[in-house]
Length: 64
Length: 193
Image (tube, rainbow over all chains, first blue to last red; front, side, top):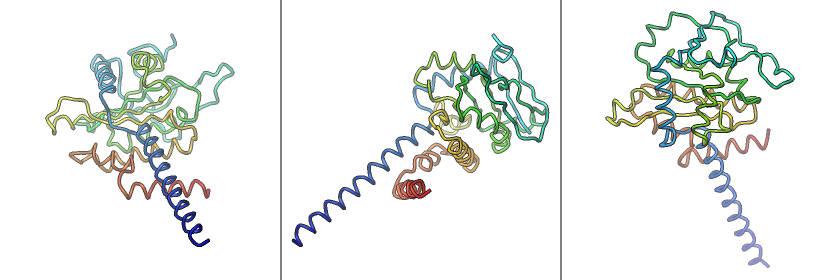
């Protein structure tokens, strides 16, 4: 009976740790989607934005 | 094409200390108070902008949701806490054109993109550097504000750093053991609250 209890406790512990690891991984993935550094895909976007600034299509908004 | 959507329109603002207030959308779903109607602009910043660290860009197609409203109401904060680095606000039409060309961004706007102008100079690399905050991924207005605050806080506190990308990434992505503990702490708070 004791062995069964120990096995169940161990399994429960592993399941808990696994769930925590999964949750951490999921939240980190969400954070990477939310905030990130500019990557290769963004390079073209930034180039286009730079061009718009250089051509005067975009003017700075400055608040006080 | 509305006045707001015309390219080349400079949205100069009048100085105001009041908080920006956005009226509710009309029955057609349009926001009558678009970016063109937002107040503020002053000329005192030209000297301060002589050597900015970042160029900020706001890409917003005009989705009806909490994120656009929150960011419009807090535009002042972006410039105030970033040493008056220039903030360029794309019109809805300009934003839509950008997203049409780069469909991987659809659904993520409003996007606040911070282009680091000095990273390439210090590292000698010619690639573009900087960060983006995809506020359109958040549904809860309070979480939008929290994310914006956190983003601005980190950029402001690390703006003198040589390798700002590494530091910001480590903190925003909650890497390592400390980050994992932080994730669990926030999860526990969310469950409790």
